[in-house]
Image (cartoon, rainbow, N blue to C red; front, top):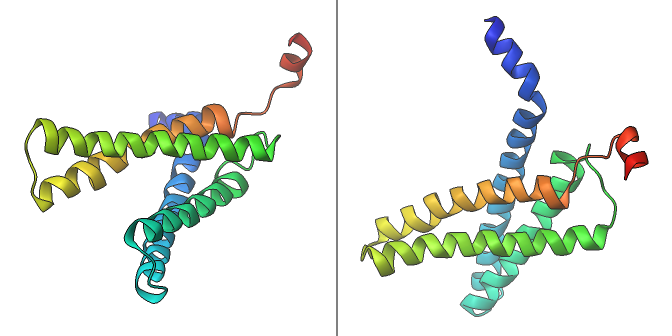
Length: 153
């Protein structure tokens, strides 16, 4: 039991960030589904336009949730730069998802609905989310600089 409590104390902040990141991601995903379907079926927008606008809405929700909840204890300088980095890194995450789908369909030749969903919506989203979490912590919502480190820099 002591090992578990020691591990928890050591990784408590990371565990809480991962849990909050997942919660924000779930809200962003629901936002994407709702907004995209609203744009398609209520407003009658074309498929790609509705998808793009739904993705934009989800990205805004994800940015706000991660900035003001998941990583609120981290540095928050430069809102515009953080937002540009956030969108750019989301683009890389999207490329990871599309790459998984391309590999499954184009290289492996698996082109059924199950293969597409596993490749794009399970493996691709999973790998993309791991990349997003790591990159947000590293570049968008950086750890605050300690007092001694700022004097050395």
